[in-house]
Image (cartoon, helix red, strand yellow):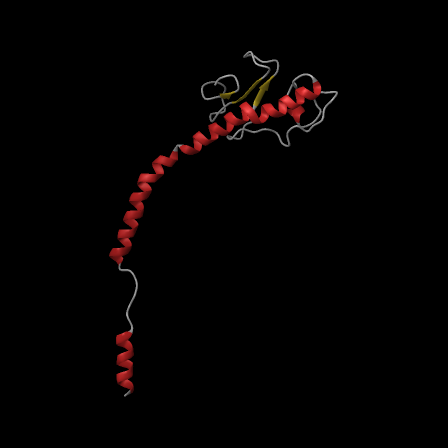
Amino acid sequence: MTEKRIANHESRITKTGFTLVELLLVVIILGALAAMIVPRLAGRSEQAKVAIAKADVTSNIPLALDLYELDNGRYPNSLQALQSNTGGGSNWNGPYIKKKPVDPWGNEYKYKCPPDHGRDYDLFSLGPNGVEGGDDVTNWED
């Protein structure tokens, strides 16, 4: 009797799992999807860095510079004056920024006052290559 119960029990057990062919098929499908999607996303990180730098030189840092100018009647000589009163502003109410502004590529933003390009000041990033010219992100070019 026990032999019949064991045989019955074994026949009711079904083996579950994936075959090697099924696993290979899934890997091939995932590889094909990755091959289609990855090239579309590859250039987006550099575009995002440029967009961040553009926002910094056209609105984020200029806001702090404008607040400094409102308090002191002139723009600072350096971006360092936005963190501490190194510029000697008599009505300095800072810090106007919490930390030194650094572009998405890890370089400090460049600031010139008096400017070379007909604005109140020149503010720019040297871009991904870190060298002036070519791929710079500036506040004077739209």
